[in-house]
Length: 370
Length: 197
Ligand SMILES: Cc1cc2nc3c(=O)[nH]c(=O)nc-3n(C[C@H](O)[C@H](O)[C@H](O)COP(=O)(O)OP(=O)(O)OC[C@H]3O[C@@H](n4cnc5c(N)ncnc54)[C@H](O)[C@@H]3O)c2cc1C
Ligand code: FES
Image (tube, rainbow over all chains, first blue to last red):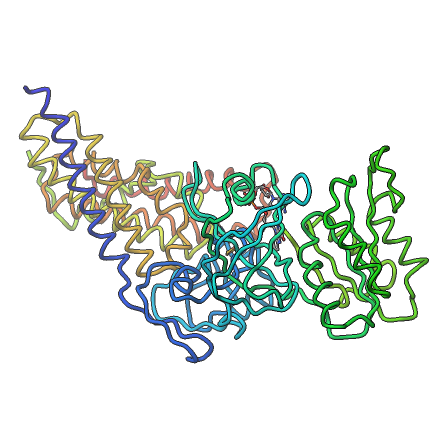
């Protein structure tokens, strides 16, 4: 029996130490009730400390944009903290510039609420709601983009065309935690009762794989929104819009909104880049809008049109086509504004084309799908 | 046999003449890497002193009342290390709560105290030398202070070294090791005065 003594001694001592650690953990990491005071005391929330600012606020139905779902990889969850919460963490610094650091702007998913804290958030965020929606329909609009309609079940989202919502993806298969991803609303603000999203499959992507394989009509899904600042300006300037793939979403919303509200005296050029005819979504709808609305011009540019498709539209890279139109077709005397939506690469390339054609950077608006 | 030692002599010896770092060369890695900055040096020195004293006390109790009676002396390495790891873990949680700034500045070195050989070294010395509980506390506390003194002294010298024309090949760890060598010689110079072996 002597041989058992050593393992027992080691086990007992380890057990006692482990118990000591968890007791200290309970005591030390219990922050008790703390208050979050928002916008100089306009709203005060009382809750238990210890969680991140982002999730503490979410638990009280205040939703800070968090396109990456709190992983510290999008920088969307910025929020000004006016009380002392210690120095910026190494995980925050890459997303902040000098001015933001000086104003103590923080990533709310990285800051832990340990004591009473004062924060400032845009008033808009008080409008953000979490809505239990039900999938109404799912339709393939291209080989890799699905159009998904969500029934808001009696609730409403009031938004300006161009805004996005966060889709809450439940845990599935090997993905243990719930995640959130941003998707622009392609439905119009006047489409009360439902919201439409265009979801492009990113191979291996957490949210899009779920949406393309496991999401079914009738399922209940949480949507949080509206978020964002992408919208049309309130000027008379010519709109030069450029999109590719699912970047169609906010433009579909903005264009139909303008058309139905009678804002048709404004000149709008919409360039859509794709590889083949199979990759152009809503081609017929856009052509139809083009024919009904004098000052709206839809230009799809295919980089590799199929031989048999009989494509008669523009061919080549979207940047080249955009450049050609800016130089030859679009009136340079009138004020022009750029609207870009899509991947960071596309936005960067189109930005260069627009600025090279004398559209200044303050007149270029974009929604980065990164 | 518990050695017959004057507590005051033991304290001074463990700080100066038998400095755990400069006479025994234990705890070098964090000593070299964190001594570039005075504030972190002070923080780490404090943390090492606290961990050293606490773990030596706990380990003494376990040694005298568990390991020796049960004739399990060969388990001492494992037991000492488990105790050290747990103590550091607890200390880490407490520092994070009490002083996030100190926690941030210590960074990776706080968990690394677990594998700081000075800590295990002190526990083993107290066993080999048969210290009493009081002697163990004094020796451990003194060794901690000695380590602290050494790292702060090195940080101060490094500050001056920045301005010195060091040959390119010796910049960084090279000149640091040479500096430590000189410091060690200075400390060992006292070793004839007091001895705790
Ligand atoms: C404001 C905003 C609006 C958006 N609107 C839409 C929209 O209307 N429709 C839409 O389909 N998507 C939109 N997105 C992108 C969307 O939020 C997700 O990032 C995207 O669907 C990928 O999610 P995932 O979980 O499947 O991939 P993840 O698991 O997050 O990523 C898997 C891998 O793919 C890479 N990756 C992430 N996003 C993309 C991308 N867009 N293209 C190529 N590679 C990528 C990642 O770096 C990673 O390596 C929008 C993003 C933002 C910030
Ligand atoms: S939620 Fe994306 S960085 Fe905080």
